[in-house]
Length: 119
Image 1 (cartoon, helix red, strand yellow):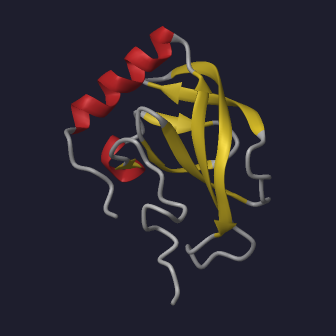
Image 2 (cartoon, one colour):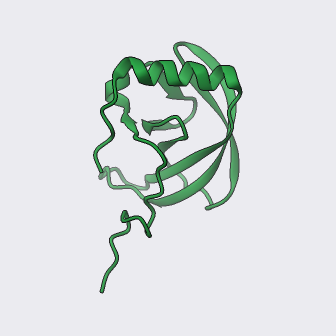
Image 3 (cartoon, helix red, strand yellow):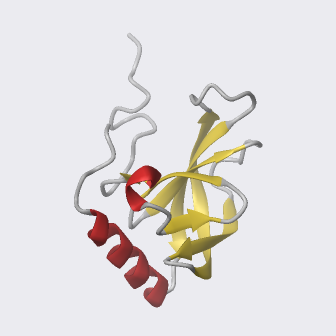
């Protein structure tokens, strides 16, 4: 029996809905990587290099044109599905997100609406 990697016991551990970047119209981005989707708890990026699971990284998140440094833990890293060679989908959970940054992120997400990223 093969388990679905995105079933609750697989890689899928989201605590909240994620919004695709296309719905945010540039309101949220990350410096040095391609942002795939975002939630109030974390982001998924596309990276040219794999990141070790459980490692913690400092990232520069841009919300509404304002840059902020945040920390995130690698929750999952897998060979990407975009079709581009040597791309990795990296799921990151925020471990340090200042209160003002969290508030700006939540405002940006609420302006888009409550359309969750498709499962």
